[in-house]
Length: 227
Ligand SMILES: Nc1ncnc2c1ncn2[C@@H]1O[C@H](COP(=O)(O)OP(=O)(O)OP(=O)(O)O)[C@@H](O)[C@H]1O
Ligand SMILES: [Mg+2]
Image (cartoon, rainbow, N blue to C red; front, side, top):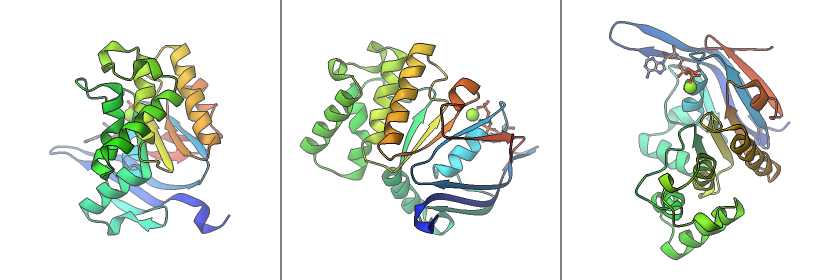
């Protein structure tokens, strides 16, 4: 595989959380390569470091040691502003708890990342409506999150993640708050996006979810182990 086909290159990364009285080694000597078009599931028990790894991959936090190259850019060389810019441009996030703003409608929630990116109002509203329609939410455009089911809210969150057309989708337990049926819907949506060329990194502790990815990686006490 050529270097340009690599989207995530993590080399010898460790993460230590230093709180006042205790030091937690959350990740230890992680090496991870993700290629464009991959669908990778990262599994592991509670506390094994899954979210910590996702925060590093998603530029929400930096490693204590080691290097991370995202789409050819060594992220350790970026300023706070550059990190935020890369994050907004390259990555779409989907979280367990949806993280929608309660006072905004579905369309307004989906538009948010584009406001930070500075596109014009008409264009971004049109794009949000298109994305929500593709995800089967055309009848819910003006509803607020508390007027929608969990599965619908998560699809709004997926539409928001797609707003800036990122190459990489990071999903941390996206089905964790959903019943089996809505969870299946969300997984089918992610699989369809992967088929369209999006790279997906999915974090889950559920075996049934993990096996739907193309590749499964396992974290144990902060180390990636082969199972
Ligand atoms: N901000 C923080 N400060 C201090 N320690 C932290 C912090 N965030 C996580 N940790 C610790 O790092 C370790 C890994 O946590 P992490 O959240 O990555 O686990 P996880 O695999 O996502 O667990 P879960 O399945 O419960 O979400 C845990 O021991 C946790 O207590
Ligand atoms: Mg977690």
